[in-house]
Image 1: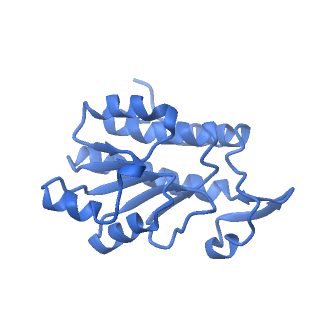
Image 2 (image 1 turned 90 degrees about the vertical axis):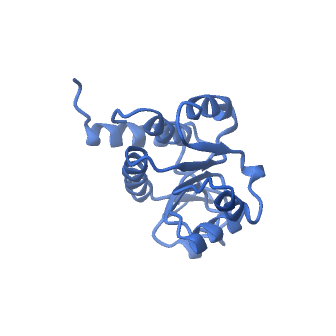
Length: 187
């Protein structure tokens, strides 16, 4: 059996993010003051994310997803890179986890899930521009992992992964979270 090599995995992800410019944010400098520690500075007018910090948060998130999956707890995925949507829906049908499109999340969605008996124990969002999702998770005590960019408010996010959301490297990271849920194997 092949042994999981965490350092090799981290280097592969880092290379993918660098190659696909997963470290480049927007040209807006106003958002940086709210997220100190997640940015290295500016390059040619664009913000530069601290990929080491994002990868550290991502590896913690992977471990959390693995724990929730092995503990038979439910994970709700909200939003996805568009070209991965059909794959993720197909992959999650084999599991107890649920996927909804980001535009399906409206104020009160978490409360409605709780009332219907489908209580998610962990929520993972991708490209969440609505801050009320993170506030609902915070109020209900549901951990939130969120792939965000520099335009998003991270105040109520437990595991913010700041990256360029249009990057192919980021899509690979999200794909790894899904794979963690659909199998009992290491990443």
